[in-house]
Image 1 (cartoon, rainbow, N blue to C red):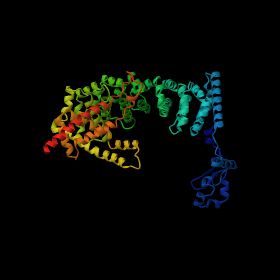
Image 2 (cartoon, rainbow, N blue to C red):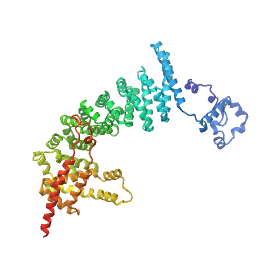
Image 3 (tube, helix red, strand yellow):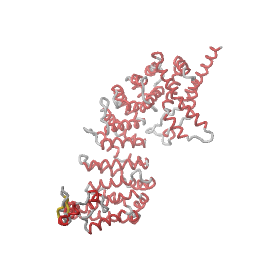
Image 4 (cartoon, one colour):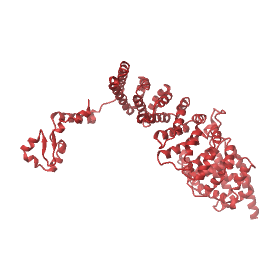
Amino acid sequence: MNVDAIFKESNGPLDKKRKLEDGRYVGVDAENHDGHPEQETKSKSEEEYDEEGGRFFGGGLTEKEEKALNFLNTVDDGDNEPTFDAAALKKKIIALEKALNKNQMLRTKYPNAPEKFIESEADLDAEIHGLTVLSEYPELYSDLVQLNTTNTLFELFGHENIDIVIAIIDLLVELTDEDVEPDSLIILQKDLIEKGLFSIITEIMKRMNEENEDDAHGVFASFQLVENLVSINADVCEEIKNTDLIQFLLNRASKQEATVSENLQFSVELLAVLCSKSPAIRVSIVEKNGIEILLNRISLYARRNPVPGLEAELMQNAFDVLCSVVEEQQGKMQFLKEEGIELCLLMLQQKKQSRKPAFKLVDHALFGPLSLPLCNRFVEFGGLKYLFSTFMKKMEAEMLEHICAIMASLFRSLAADTPERIRFLAKFVEKDFTKTKKLVDFYSKLRKPITEIRQSAKAQTNLEEDSLALFLKQIDMGLFSFQSIVVILAWLCCEDSAICECISNSLKAFGLQLHDLLSDLQDYFENFAESPETISDEKSEESIPRVDEKPMVQTLLEIMQIQVHESQETNSGRSA
């Protein structure tokens, strides 16, 4: 049926009755109005509020049009709402297969005459879109799988018309939406993965030309589908690792565009999602030269700010990927080789929007096992200047967290009696221990709310505080920064007696003692949780676990206990 032709028909019923500016009518009904002048004097308010629908519906409707309206009202009645069940699903699938078979037959019979099969292709597209209703009935997903419908969908992935392929991708995006019931999603996800969806979807994206608007949408929808499937169950990342998808995403992320497109931004965002889910993906990115690609991407923002919107999101996601990959030992070494530390220091110097994520990236790069080369590089190229100048200024909580974590990593990794460690310690002595006193100030401010939360939880003898809720409350109060500062102050007390005395005197100004610092360090030690990497059964050269900080904290505790004991004896002697 040609809907446009119906509306364009000049002699249609809607054209037979047109009202002029003076209120008179022309057309087949004009003589009726001329013969009944009293109708022309009908008040405007009566016309507008006619019970049959006002001036638009009040009169002029043919018997056929009235029947049509009555039918629509009946369909809209909730009591007659059609149900969608397994039988209805089966009918839709049969209709889809029939449309596919007819289209294939006509394409084979008339390969050089598109006009012969174009109508069957439109029917096929309509049947595909008709299956989106299934997303409202996730309980039927098991039936969908049992009927081998995904075999038909995968067959359509090879269709000559890329629009049909994109329609299948859109359908799967709809069916795997996060709002769908999880158990049903897992059933469909498992079936799709077993059939090799990630490899197929990657090959399909390679076929697409993003200069074409429809193909660009196809790539975007493919990214959505991958993101949906990973969100259902992150274990599928192991399957992704064995495909070309990571390489495709890196290639897409490396393309330079005058204006950042949605697909460029999404390619980097998807890499960030995958990195957050799987160490294997992080290693794969390193092996595929991903660090160089991503460093080149963020280098654009060393001297200029990103355009708000997609470009700003792109920059942030690129930093997030790098923060993830440098947690792996291979990533650290590759980051060092590609001069990632130097690029971050340039960003700290320029003070653009990239400065904040650059601090975060340095934090991740310097933390963990075998980080000594990166810590040395950071000090060697002037990182202490930017670190402490920021520390001494007013800053937000997140920035404090990263700066304190960097300091703790430097204490942990810089070798004793080396020029780098001596330069680092000197920062806490210069200008009458200004930076040390600043640390004590932060310590006292963070300690008060965290201590109050803990005491409140202990006081609830009849109702045990949920441990996770308590932990999250402490995080909101700056727990991570507080723990880093406790470790830093402990290191300083152990490293230098003059600094230890300064810390002790500074604590007294806030009504605290070294014993309170020792107590907080003891609490940190007792609540130390092993990281997933540490307790993993799979320990190989390619997956070195995070350094276990517990022995380090235990050593600090032992030394601090001696320091506190000596301090107490000294104070007792002075009192005597």
